[in-house]
Length: 179
Image (cartoon, rainbow, N blue to C red; front, side, top):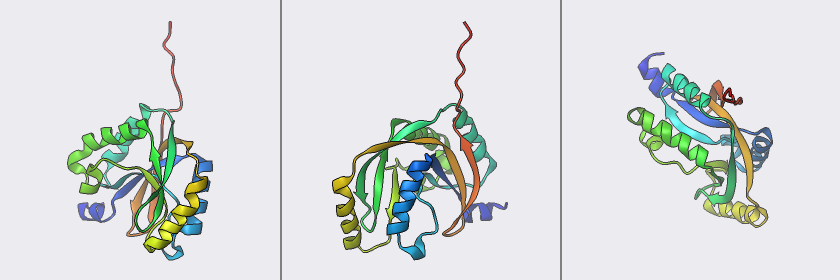
């Protein structure tokens, strides 16, 4: 791929979340995201626009070998102004992002160089009063919950839709030292 095409079609890195959480967020997204703009499943973004270069997969594969699956917490329903999301918190998630952000700093977009406020969007690009209405419906019954993250998905951004590239799984196996 030429450098110009790489810049035009960056990679998006999202987290592989448990199937039950994925189903839950997808269902809410299908109900509340404008149908004409909803061509993606719900997702937890790690990076928005990585260069489409082999070193990205190599670095992520190396990092994945150092990590096991971990839990994140859907902590609150939050406003996006013209949308609604769930705030996602986890020390492990923040640490992984910070490690990669430092390693890749000179290769990242301004958006990806920033500290992340992790979230899963279930509604976007609606009038603010519609977003506030959904938040007022969801918030009273919402109770924080945890779900597992077990890897990283890479997608190629195609100007709206995404093309699946690969999934890199966190190491599931522990080896105990021989005594």
